[in-house]
Length: 194
Image 1 (cartoon, rainbow, N blue to C red):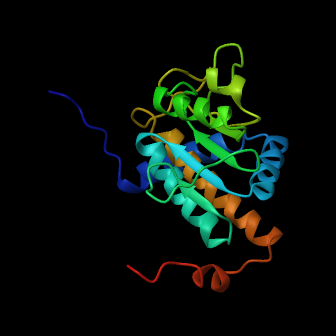
Image 2 (tube, one colour):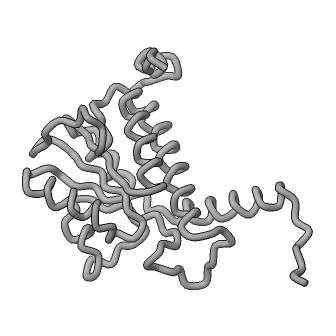
């Protein structure tokens, strides 16, 4: 008979929060600065990601809109044409997701700047990293990359998705300060049709 550890939900929450903190503490501040500059200078921003990463990307685009920036998520019927003054934020843990790579290629052909958020940053191996103007690394395990000396206690790429969500939420707080936005000003831009 298989033994089950006697862990509580609080133990599991502690594990998750400890892992997220470990990953987020490794983020390069200089990469964050470049990422912020790309976002703030873009006329239009389109965010994309696949699977659970795509869900996180959608939430980030929504918050960018609440900040007053012109932001969309790939897949929305209202995504406009993009070009030289615009930014595609491509989110891919592996840096190799084929559907996202195809979008990066298409955007690059129009002169759109590319900001890649990935856990994989070997420029010699990552096709998207080679095409990106800016790369921000969230060093969590992905389906193609393990981290030496670290193994997540969570399944699959859960830690990557969680760290990405918290990173984007922290970034929104930085934008609020830089753009003099508040809870109230952002609520004023929130949809009333829900």
